[in-house]
Image (cartoon, rainbow, N blue to C red; front, side, top):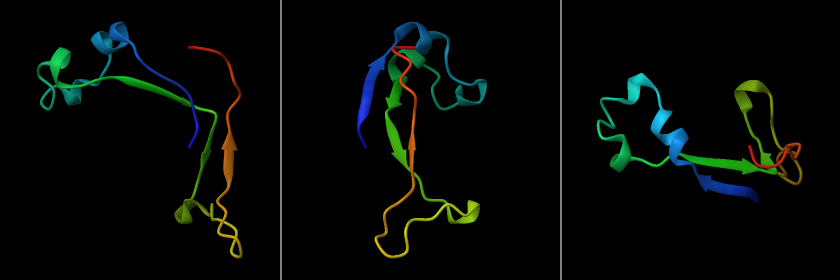
Amino acid sequence: MEWQNLWIHKMKKKNGGKDEWEAFYPNKSDDYLLIKISPEWVEVISESRGIVGDSITWKPPIVFFNKKGDQ
């Protein structure tokens, strides 16, 4: 997978997360990192949803994302 960008944003980390995570990460500032990953594309396989690869080449379907800059 090719990554368009990978960054850690302290403000989002400070305000991020779900309330349900509190038991796992009581000290958010030291116990985890919030990482934003913006791929240009991903390969997808989901047999339960009928998304399968090519039966001859085994090549998976690819989803391309529009490039919108740093968000």
